[in-house]
Figure 1: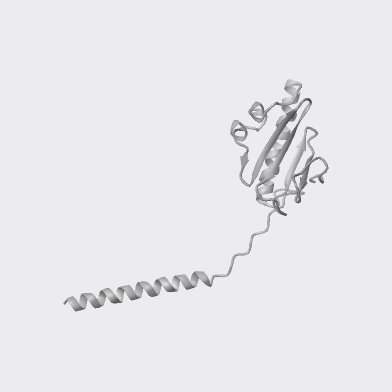
Figure 2: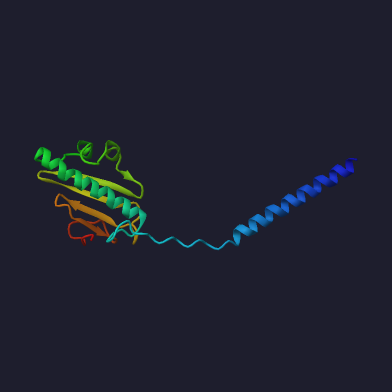
Length: 153
């Protein structure tokens, strides 16, 4: 009787091993999935990736809130925290400068401000962005964006 149990146990181990090997082989032979190309969010969307779309969306919200803040207070906000609650810019958005693949930069100046979105990895799908109080967004995929960088359409 011990022999029979031993035989069944060995057979079970062999079957489980074969199944595991088959699964591993099947995984290795699976074709690599092609990267899904970015789908524009609206006609004329200048973003090249989901990360860029999120970064540009954040910038548009900040720029809109600054415009509204200036109408109410006759000056621009000194900090992102001071801007919170204006328009659709929330305290949560002002809480952290980490925005996924990007880091927010905000510097208040005497009669204006500079807003930047710097990617953690600068490449074709993660451009850096720059905007001042005029509301024009500039982008660059070679270096940190500045006023001389091409305008984002």
